[in-house]
Image (cartoon, rainbow, N blue to C red; front, top):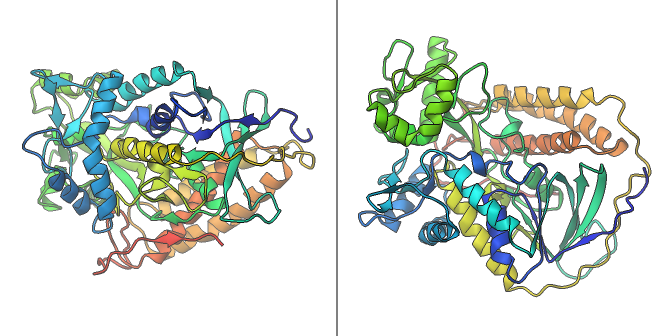
Length: 531
C-alpha cells in the first residue's frame, strides 16, 4: 500500500474520544461549529459508561462549596490546585442541571435528587442513577449526539498521531500549532487525514498499562501519548489511583464494586470476618481510596490472601437491592448473594490523575489543541482523586474548552500531507505485539503498583527501554494496526509514569515509596517537558 488516496476530512473541531468529556464538548460546539467525534471502537465504549457511583456536586442546603473544596484538597494530599478545585466545584451544580435538561433520569427521593455519600466526602453530595450513573448519562448523551446535525461520529477510527506545524517541516511563524490528525479507519484499514483548526483530546486514561484494572480495554493512554509526542507537557503521571474494591472472580475481569457500597455502610473484612480498616485509619471504610487500597494491599500480603471481603449484608435486603441493583444482579449471576454474603474484592488500577497539562480553559501547550477529562491534568485531583469528582470535571472542562473555542477565530488550516505507507510492509510476526503487551502490563503491576521502591522502578525503566526499541522498530517498518498503536501508546505512558515516580522523593497520596516513606513539607507537581 502506498500513500492514502482518500480525500482529507475537513471540520471546524476534531474531538478524539466519545466519553462524557468528548460528547459534552460536541454538544456545546454543535450549534455553530462542524464537529467530528472520532472513537476507536463504538461510541458507547469507554470508561464513562462504566462509572457506577455518581457525580459530586453541592446540591443540598446543608452542604457548601467550601466543604466540597476542602474535601477535594484533603484527598489530593496538598497537591490539588486551589483555583482549579474552586472552578470545578462552583460549576458542578450547573452541570447537573444541564444533564437534567438533557433528560438524564437521576435517582429521586420524595421528589428531590437522592444524594449519597462516598469515601472522603464530608456530606451527601453524590448525584446518581442507582448504581449505574455513567451508563445512564452516556445513553442520554449518545442519543442527543446522534440527533445533532452538526456532529459527525467516526466509529472504529483510531488516533495515529496529531499533525503539528513542526511536523510539516517548513519553518512557520508563531507558536507551534495543531493542524489536525491522522486516524486509522479499521473498517477500510486505511489511514485518513483529518484537518481542523481546533482539536480536543478526550481519550480517557491509561488503566490498561496495568495487569489488573477496572478500566475497559480502550483505556490505553492514547491522548496522553499523542500530546506528549506533539510537544505538550505532562504532569503528575506517578499518581495512578488504584480502586480498592474490584470484584475478585475467575470468570470476571474489570468489574468495579462501587465506592457507594462503602458509603452506605459496607465493611471490609478478612476471611475470618475480622474488620481491619479501623486499625489503618480513623475514617475506616470512608477513608480516601489510596488509604483503603494500601490497607487492603497490606492485609493481603501480611496474611497471604488472594482477596479480602466487602460486606453490605447487615443492611436490609430490600435496601441493598434498591441502591445497588446492578451490582446485586451481576454478583448473583456469579453465585454471590450480596444481601447474605460478602463480596470478594482486590485493588485494581482505576484512574489516571495526571495527564496532558492544561489551563482552566482546557488549553494545552500547543495552539489549537485542548485536552479534557481523564486525558488532562487540570490540577483538580492532585495526588489522589476524590470519589465522583471525575465525571463533573469532564463536564466543567468540556464547557470551558468549548467556550474558549467558540471565542477563537477559525483560521483555514494549510494543506496537510497524506499518510505515507510506501516504505512499510505487512507484519509477519504480530505475536510480538501481544507478547510485549503482556510483558509491559505484568512488570508495571509488579514494579510500579500500589507500593514502590527505587529498585523496582529501575527494573521497570530498564524493561521499558528494551520494549521501546522493539515497538518503535515495529512501528517504523510495518503497517499500523490498532494493537500496535495501543502498545506504542502504552509503552510511552509507562515511561512517563516511571520517570515521574523516580523524580518524586517522598510518599504522597497515591505514590507510596518504601525508600521515601515520609511526605515532604512542600507540595510540588511533577511536570515532564518533551525535548
